[in-house]
Amino acid sequence: MDLRAKITASHYVLPEGRLTNETLSERFPPKKVAGISKLSGIYERRVAPKGATSVDLGAECAKRMLEDLNIPADDFDMLIFASQTRDYILPASAFIIHEKLGLPQTCGAFDLPLGCAAFPYAMGVANGLIASGQCKKILLIAAETITRLIYPKDRGLAPLHGDGAASFVICASEDGSGFEFADFGADSSGWKYLIVPDGGMRSPLSPSSFEEKTDESGITTTNASIQMDGAAVFHFSISTIPGAIKKALAKNKADIASYDLVLLHQANKMMLDQIYGALGVPEERRFFFMEKIGNLSAASSPVLLAEALREGKLAGGGRLLLSAFGVGLTWGTFSMKFAPGSATPAKASTQF
Image (cartoon, rainbow, N blue to C red; front, side):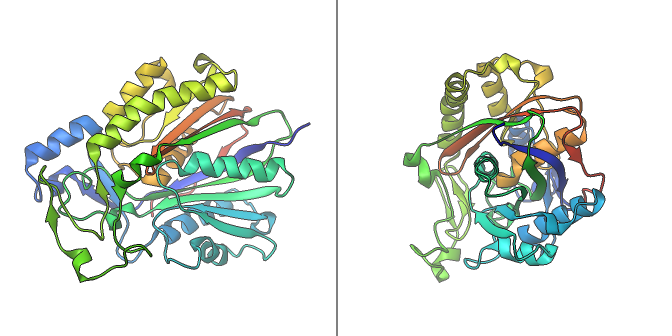
């Protein structure tokens, strides 16, 4: 039988700190805040405590999962860490998590520094490592402290984003369940639509990086913070993603009606409703988890899946289709079959 990856365990953590609409209304006009929340479906965001990074959230999430489910750290032969908010330019943050969790020297580790679409890409890589026989057990962690990159006066992004982490154990399937296919794409003409201009090799940080600038729409930010062309990203999402998902299904001879659960990157409720509608996904097969946590970037769709598993959405088995999209501009979609009781959610605390 051909090897394929399957998820056998999951968990997620969210910071205790909350950024409410009431607090945002002290920074921005209350009507603007209320209007953004109505469109986005986000009314509260989780914010990591001062000094805590995505590495801390991710390591703690995985630690609780392994302890709760009695999974030895020595079992793993690869760690994948998906995040854009890493601790250092180098070394890779995966090595820091590797040490924090006490993983063996026989376990490799690497970062996957993508944004919103990171989870499908990471799952595709994990499946490739399993299917090729290079790995037997993989620890996949996705975590972000994306709020650190948002300028407090940016009324376009501050109401949308939060911090969080999710972790999964991925093994070879022996029962016919597991990974079915993945499909990826990128419209690189839009790479400037979501960007932190300064801080890399192309444009190092300088005093001018922290100077405020306000665009014609009234959004204030700096070159050391995330800048987004919201209209362009929204147009990309509703015009490109439904077609990309349909192409992925057609290429793999799959029918959207055969899926028990269809998950989408939690960016904007109005946007997701349009994509779900274009795909013909009925309400009972949709799932949202953004209202009180916000858009978590690379951690968004993995936290969404971890919560769905925690709520028993696939406890009896079934097929999952997950698509995530954003920074790049890029997208990824993967399909996975779950056997009854095959993916065990940890019962540990989800509060960081």
